[in-house]
Length: 230
Ligand code: DX5
Ligand code: ZN
Image (cartoon, rainbow, N blue to C red; front, side, top):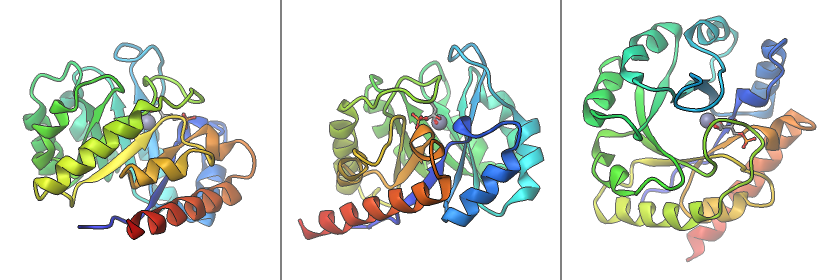
């Protein structure tokens, strides 16, 4: 069984958009592993955020991998632009995406890590049937669109089921990412359920970002050590 490293991924959606550089430097200081960038089109989700132009602007500021979470319709149209802007990994939502394998292959053709994202009530079969084309699977723990929403606890059994499926099918090199409502008080059960890429926005940016990243990692790694005992 592969035990994946815990990766802390602050979501810039909760950052200060008037001074992203300052928050990105704090992410570095706190030891973040990934910077999570939420791209929303006002169509797939009822909110508008940022596009490749912002990814391009922050790319020179840090060496931390940039992960773009595309909450947009027809994501295939924009993969090349995000690659050129400096993304290191891209996840696309399966809901409404007709050619999942083709889109994942397109992401990989640029040398990027590819992920699929599933909303909290999207059947796991979508993940089972395309897992072997993925580097990671993003299980949403809120309906996407906004920061600061409440964690939906069914994530826990979904993540456990998916981790077991990956184990049974020799696919356990694939990482599970959680996104939405991740906080100090639930991160342990989330890790025990098999997720190792931990996206957090409001849980990290409200208060002392540097300290919060370190604290979330500490709790997550404790839980991972406990999980190993079983
Ligand atoms: C929600 C986004 C998340 C969001 C998480 O649609 O995909 O990445 O920033 O924010 P919190 O951690 O505040 O739920
Ligand atoms: Zn996200």
